[in-house]
Image (cartoon, rainbow, N blue to C red):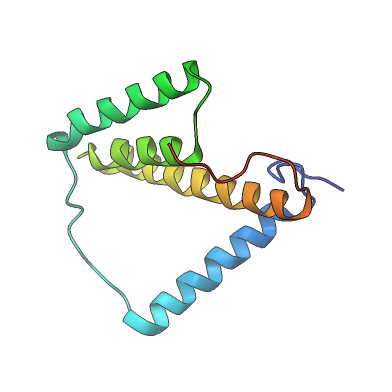
Length: 119
C-alpha cells in the first residue's frame, strides 16, 4: 500500500527517513553534540536569487534537475538570518534531499525513468 510521501514506491519514505536517522546517530556517535553559528544571512541573497532563476530557466527549457532544485533550497536557507525562517528553509532542504533519494530508489526498481544527467 502506498502512503502519502511514498513517491510511487510503497514504504520508501519510511526507509529513507530511517536511513537519515541512522546517519544522524552515526554523526552523534562520531562527533557528539555540535554547536556552531549558523553562518547565514542576507549576504547570500543574490546567490539565492540566481539559483531561483536557474530553476525557472531550467524548467522552462525542459532541463530541470534535482541538483537545480536542491541548490536553490540550500541557497535560500543560506540567505536567511531569522531562526524561524531558516528552520523552515532547512526543512525544505531536507524534504527535497529525501525526495531525491526516493527518486533514486524508485529508478533502481523501475528502470527507464530519468537518469543521472549533467547540466
